[in-house]
Length: 447
Image 1 (cartoon, helix red, strand yellow):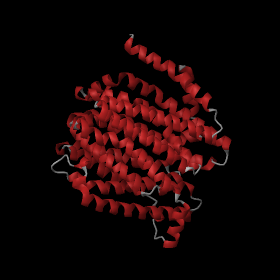
Image 2 (cartoon, rainbow, N blue to C red):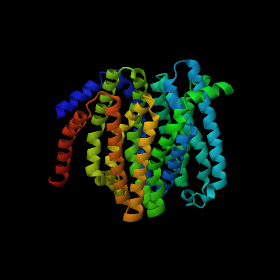
Image 3 (cartoon, one colour):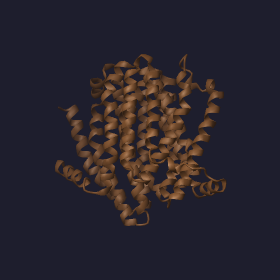
Image 4 (tube, rainbow, N blue to C red):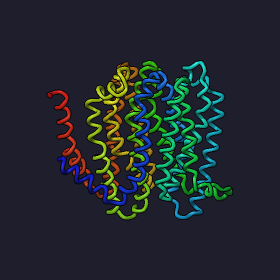
């Protein structure tokens, strides 16, 4: 088995797809190594309550950023010429500005009525939320612009720059408590957006009403289907971060957010890097069923062999790892991390290839799937909170439902939009995954 894994990693380095991924992942790996390196320091400078407030701030920002672009950034990949790309980018900047202003007005009027934001006497950070959403929207837009141009190095540089600024500020501003964490995230978001703008300002031009109307009509599926489905998906993913502090206390909210951040951030960034390259290459191969199917299969293999071993080790030894690295105060976060693993594994395995729906322009199907997935997640979350009234059971239910949903989503996409034998594929996954998992379990409980 070890020889087989070595051969697979060697073969991965020989194809163009993986080289583009390496360009993105090398930058994102550095970007993630810095905050992971300082995490043991941050957990000793800040309390779980501080991390809980940071989690609520980031969750709210991420949820709103799924709306603020209208998902028109995805349309960039389907443009055929420079003029069309310029029209999409210019339109998206207008959409981002409009929604940011709209949310800003609503937030100003209804701030005191939003329960998630009423837990601190001096909520200065509340006023940073909408500007953060604006810059996250700009970052999304010009990330896809650079993918279209194959400027993977610039994307990597922007992520490293963001990571350095965020880590430096969060370490330096610890006397401000949770505000130090939030300022680090906010300022680093500005830095990343500015770096991604390099060489792309020329695409931001005044757009005529008739052109904007025609562009919206051409890409109307993105705001109609991609935006609500993405909002439901991201909203339910972020829901535990918002609800756990409300029902179980800010300490448990902070412990969950830290476990989620440590586990899911590198997974989402690496999966995002692979997904972005897959999106770019898949868009080129969409009319060649055999080549497209080969790309999907290779991507899935890469995702499996990159994730299974480290996630299995963390699943079995999560409590011990968190206690040793972050301190005894964060031991419970290790239990939460173990509970999140099934969701994290299938999320990493499936998320990049969800772009199949966008590439094939079948957004309405993705919308239905994500609505069902979001509803099931919400039911699991509320069942854990209101019936079992236990934070660990709540997280475990949420994780298992998410894992099953991602598995079903992947099975449907591969079966319907590729020539891959789905039963054979999952049999291969189980064949190589099960022996290692059993070996790790034996190591913990029988040696």
